[in-house]
Every structure is written in C-alpha cells, then in structure tokens.
Image 1 (cartoon, rainbow, N blue to C red):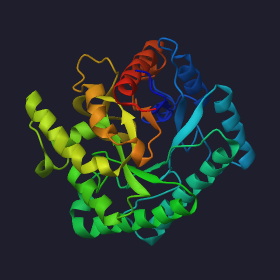
Image 2 (image 1 turned 45 degrees about the vertical axis):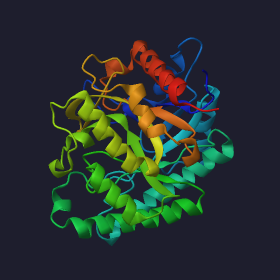
Image 3 (image 1 turned 60 degrees about the vertical axis):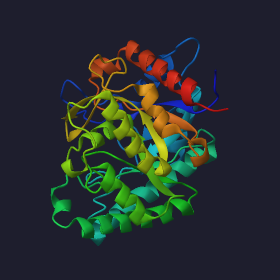
Image 4 (image 1 turned 90 degrees about the horizontal axis):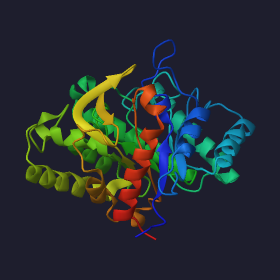
Length: 342
C-alpha cells in the first residue's frame, strides 16, 4: 500500500562528517550532495527532501538572509524540501560543551539561536515546513562525565532546558541524537535519564538512529546498561529491542534509517561512534524495515512527518556511486510501505 508519509529525506552531512581537505576523502559540496540525491529513483519514486548541516562548507552559520534564501532556492529548484537541521553545537563550530562552564553553555545556546534564525528564513521561504533541530551534548567522550555523573547530567539538562525555551520561542523543537560518543547520551538508559531531567517532552525529545541505537543494546561505553551479549540470538535481540524502544519511543521526535555491522567506527575528527553501512551491506546486522517499525509506532501522533537516511562516514567513492542511493531509497520505501500513514 502506498503511503503519503513519512516523507523520505537524504542527509547532507555525510558529505562533511569525517571528511578532511587534503585527504582521499575531502568534503563533498552541498551542490554535489543535492545532485546525488535527485539522481536516485526507484520505480518512479524519488527523495522528497534533505536534512541539512548548519556549518561550513555547506552553510555559513552567519550567512545573510539573502545568502540563506539562495540556498533555499537551490534546494527547491531540485524539487526538494528541507527538513531537520543539525545545529553547530560543537567546539570549533559555533557552540561548545553543554556540560561546560557558563561561557561554554552560552556558546551552545548561541548555536541553537543561530539554527532557529536559519530555520525561520527557510520556513518563510517555503522550502521548509516540517522537521526540527538536532543537538547533542557536544561533550565528546564519557571520561569527564564519569567523574560526577549526577552533577554532569544535571548540567547538560540545564543547558538543554534553556535551549528548549529558545527553540519554543521560535516555534521549533529539538531532538538529541542518541550516540555512544556523546557524554550523558552514551547509553539508552543515560539518555533516558537526561530526557526525563530536561522534562520538556513537547519541545526536547530524542532522535533515534538505527545504527547508533544498535550499539546501545551492546552497552558500548556503558556495559552496565547492555541488553544483549555480542553473540546474542535473534530472540534475545528482539526482546532487548522492545525494551529499548518502549523506553525511548515516547520521546522520539525524529528518526534516521541506517544499517550497522555491530562495529565501533570513526574517521577524521569523529571517532568511536556507530558504523553506518550501506543498506545492502552483507555484514549488516539489522532488519531495517522491521526495526524501523518499533520506532515509528505512533510517529504521526508525535509530529513526525519525515524520516532521513544517515550514511555518516561512507567513503567518498561510496557516496559518489548511484547504486548507493538507489539501494537506500529502496529500503526507505520498504519502511514507508510497512509503517507509513496517509
């Protein structure tokens, strides 16, 4: 059965994350990522839109309204919409650690304010009418967090709560992406504790990524929260998956389709995270369509209007291969066929 929603988006940040000038994997321009996106087609179906990373070289966070409108014109000219936006919350971009001192917190909040300003320009343009703003703790690694987990989680929650008020004032919502590399968000239980501490379920929620959340089950960076062993059976996997998704699904406001081979992976300056694999990777551990159903139950009621593929840290040759995007689009269509809505 064909469904109108969720809309299917491709992520633009795989052209940037883990890429470095002067290496075999330099950044891929926004223009080229858009070309690769619109070239994909499966049985007459194409991508509906893209999710964008709000930092150089794709988007100057200090760009003028006119420059931002030019980006919007380019995206719309390809017949695409813009959905969720990745806020530049990390040190070295606009922001800084959400767990840091007052100056660091202020930089984090500035990154959220900047993202809301860009979102408004694109909303007013008409190229964006759904999606939210993605954040994380911007505290890479868990060592410093472990020195005082209660105090540090409370500090991140305070930053996120203030960010939530900024977002709400602009008519936006925030979603924290659960990923094992971000302090206070590095396990399914710790990110649940953080969400409950923030306590703004209508404004600050969770972004589930199939690749990253698989490693939540394994307990990387938090063995005490592991739900399965590395040699788990299928029966054990699905029982654990139910436990994790039952806990986090009510908070889930944004969703990334992805594949994972069970490895921890990183490249460039982005180390120790879930390894995203091609949709048809023979070593992939996930039944993508079935796993997606656990997260998408009740998605429409939570205001989800689109889903996005995340191919973070794919080699450039993989990203430049049209087969990659056709295979991804095919899997996303399977997800929508199985779990979509009118």
